[in-house]
Image (cartoon, rainbow, N blue to C red; front, side, top):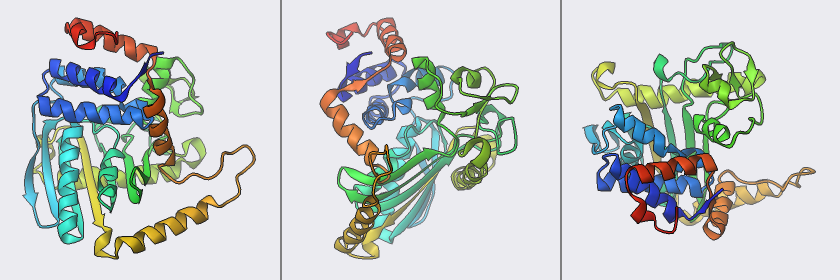
Length: 354
């Protein structure tokens, strides 16, 4: 299993995306996002996605040179048409706009539609928290059988997307408090990683094509579905959360457009950003946050546990470790990347790495 640096991953993704037709600016944004996902330990949204994005370009799902545009705007809100761009490009632009509007108005809402896979959505609320702001992001698909990968609680066929939710709150400069998870038992990318590694799932995350609970990631790709967060017994909570994320992401995102036909079946996303300095001085906010974090973490550790962690602490630890020791990439993914590099005659760009 190769061990790569963050810059190696970004370089590989950048050159392959450019070879696939991406503009320099778009390739820089997407490859930086992918390498950042690997660095944070979310390998399911990192280099492994290169093949998917190149395929989506080839079938016309992604316009690799597209830039999003604002179609409706007020002082505190905006609707953005992604123009079938890379999701990372549209979501980055949308988040930067939401931060700017929150700084002016105290709170903002930016909704996006007609964009592709946004990657690791925790990246965008983190952007806001680095500016001393809190943020909430919802993204997903709704009412489209082509992307219905998750069964609603009590059902056996897919009707919903994995529809992730992310929230962040400023804490430490390099380690905000961060919630980032799919509202299904797993993000599809984690099934992709398990399949590439040839390992079983840790629990019954999927139903096979006959509706039988399974720990084999291949059963999902053979016509199965993912269970809602909470699984077979507690899935009613994940189902409800998924439903609301769909409404907040997809419905609000589509309100800026005249009819579904214009939008296609791409992601709908919304981000809310709150400027905490509009409510209280940063010193007061920091004191309150530290007080809560320290109190929660003071709970004595359960036997066999490493102790209490705040949301986002694992990502911060993983970044530090992988910056120092490198990022492991599974053999299947790296073999596919090397094949693409050779196919596009990019060997000279990676002298000493292949």
